[in-house]
Amino acid sequence: MKLRGIELTNIRRFAGRRAVLSDLGDGITVLSEPNEFGKSTFFDALHALFFERHRSSRAPVKALQPHAGGAPEVAVDIDLPQGRFRIHKRFLSRAQARITDAQGRLIAQEDEAEAWIDRLLDGGLAGPSGCCGCARACWDWSRRATARPTGRIATATWGRGATCCRRLPERST
Image (cartoon, rainbow, N blue to C red; front, side, top):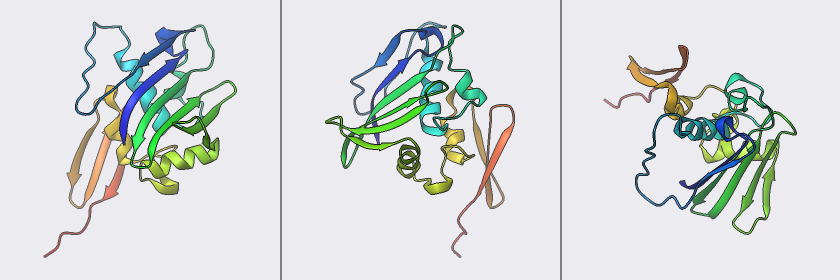
């Protein structure tokens, strides 16, 4: 998956406005701006898009809402081997999730869109959207996730000490 663009609408400091990062190319993209410019907001919104259900009212989703209220929206354009797709979620008020292709044709919506995202992230039905997955810790940019092996179990810790684990593959002898 290659991220090609991110669009935020009505999120935190962008209350009642759109903020767009577009034309993201191959390789490394660096966001370099002064403090309070909105860099962490983009990462938190990206995290919510991939790891929070559109109907969620959990703290990470509520934290996206501007002080004036309203429904935060996040959309990304991604390239996959099958083509370009847009993933769009609206949280809190009139929540929705949609996946469209490059021509704007609807691929999936609501719970089917959440399942599509789970499959995209290789999480299956117990994937990262809506549950604790180690991939989630890797995506929790602003909270400085750490991962470490502990015997044959890898643990990842993020946020306020939340931890998840997964069993490592057995070593071949």
